[in-house]
Image (cartoon, rainbow, N blue to C red; front, side, top):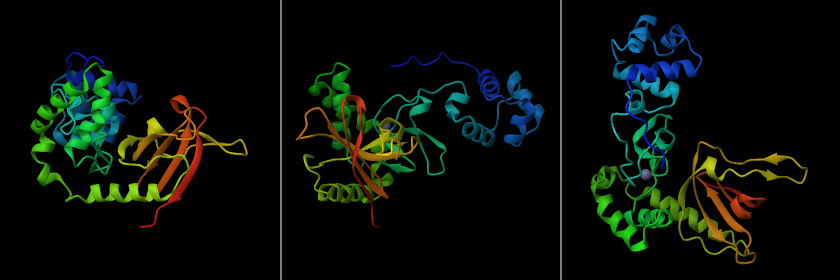
Length: 263
Ligand SMILES: [Zn+2]
């Protein structure tokens, strides 16, 4: 895991972000509806932006408010417990960062895990790679998760199983495609587009991608019962289901099915 930067001051963070974006103090002031003098005072450390300005700056620079304030808080996803860096933070429907969750647990305003055991099953393989035994990982997660805000407030935050029902329906639709060599899909996980956005080569030689890097999809990777060298990959959302096969690390992807969903 990358080391958190040492604590820095808001004034330095703001100046650095502004300079990196190529904005003058005047231009930044205009974008966040303050005077150039206000920006200058922030950067001198005389004042800090008020909460409204912080929100606008967070949106403008695409960094968390926590980062703008010099990282005083160690952000942890309140659903899975993962330490958060800005690039991993989940987003509300309007695209604003939600500093309580990672983008795998909270995507575009939707909580992706309604069931603690399902989340544990997804996390365990990652922890085993980091050197835990499966038993250690499971017992750690079982102790840690109930202390996180999301699981404490689960009843209040849950959508009465609506999202779970949607996942179940998607799974049924994917299995109904009857794709040769593909095992039955049992579960779908949240996957961020940029990790699974493979580039396909069409017959014409044109290369295309079908996903958005910034969108979170539901998907999974399954073995290919007919070809041990290739895997099945699934990516789906409310609009479509995409099934492909690929070799090691996503090499030579081939589209198997792309189906628009009916509502
Ligand atoms: Zn999380």
